Length: 128
Image 1 (cartoon, helix red, strand yellow):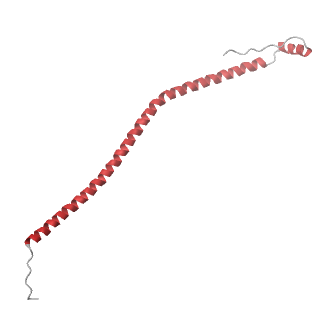
Image 2 (cartoon, rainbow, N blue to C red):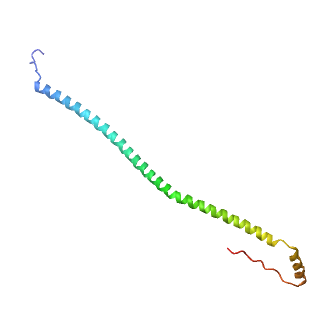
Image 3 (cartoon, rainbow, N blue to C red):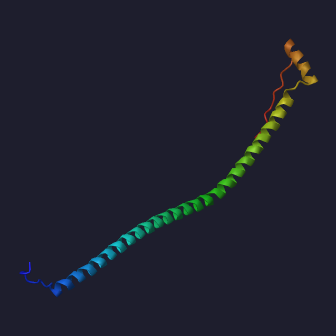
C-alpha cells in the first residue's frame, strides 16, 4: 500500500460539492415555501367561496324580506276579510233562524194551508 501514490483531491471538485449542497438547500427551502403557499392559496379559495355564498344568501334573504312585507300586509287584509265574512255569515244565520221561527200569525196560515185555504209566505234573501 505504501507503493501507492498519494491522491490529492481536486480543489475545484470540493468547491463544486459545496455549491451543490447550497443549491440543494435552496431548492429544498423553495419546495417547502411552494407547498406552504399552495396550502394558503387553497385556504383562501375556500374562504372566497364561503364569502361569495354568504353574500349570495344575504342578498337572497334581503330580497325575501322586501317581498315579505307586502305579503304580511295582504295576509292581514285577508284575515280581516275572513273575519268580516264569518261575522256576516253568523248574522245571516241568526236572521235566517229568526225568520224560520213560527209566529202566532203564521200558525194560522199553516192551519189554513192544511185546510187548503190561503197562501204560503215567500222568504226574501238579503242582497249582497
